[in-house]
Image (cartoon, rainbow over all chains, first blue to last red; front, side, top):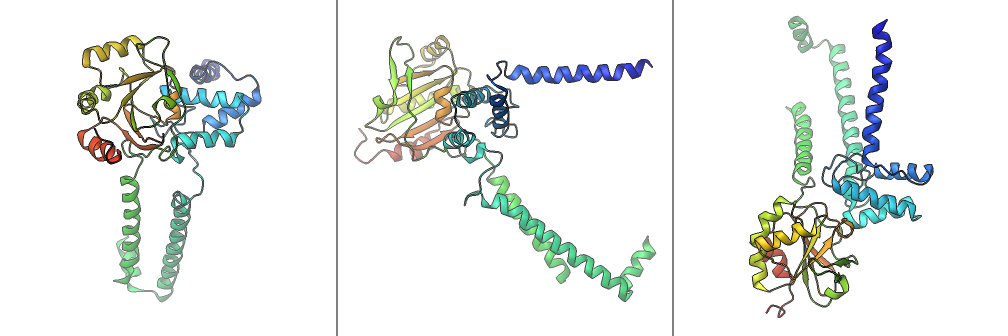
Length: 149
Length: 177
């Protein structure tokens, strides 16, 4: 009984600890929940340039805090999401976006995974068809494999 | 034999792609500035050690100049300081300092102790000007041409080679003293 009561309490404590960390990054909330939501979404879109696999929302680095302040001020000033993204790209380049736009210089980022997937599907298709043919013909190679295993 | 050619080709292609990815990964010293060819961002900042005085981008227009972003908290800035002192002795380009997220007293002590290579130092206490320059780590050094356009950005400590190849070479012919 004791341990059953303890688990929710522990989870609750953990949740509190996690939310305390999240709040510690930016103490001052935005004036309205709508602005706060846009701020939260935008700050997750921008890369922290000093710790490149974190977003500026997650990073405790000073520059990330400065960029969050920049986003906050632009959101409050009435800039649209696209205007804010453009202002970030104008200063730091496409690399600051976790989801870069489709352009000549970034095309391979988008095209290559699809291309590799198609190659993989083609190779898998060929292998499956070859194996199917091998079983039907009762090839000696298959027999050898069976003896070993 | 042919059954090995396709996997081998795929492997080599993949290795090639990964190699390119590793070599061109956004290395701190190779990342190009997004400001190249664009007009220098407008700024109006207090001058270090001169209360009441401000430095603006328009005051610097008309001839090429160099902006060096530094702070006393920045280890690599200390590393490049000797090089900056040597550069300032050449008198080839005005070297403007941008004291980034620092404290005035610490910055002035630093220049007193190590020597002052700068023509003037602008104070960016809260880091807003640095963001507009796309700065992500000190030291960074920019070459700005006479038309006020950013022509080059070097990330990391300045070296004699980089100074000669990327900065001195951008001064228009005949402008050297």
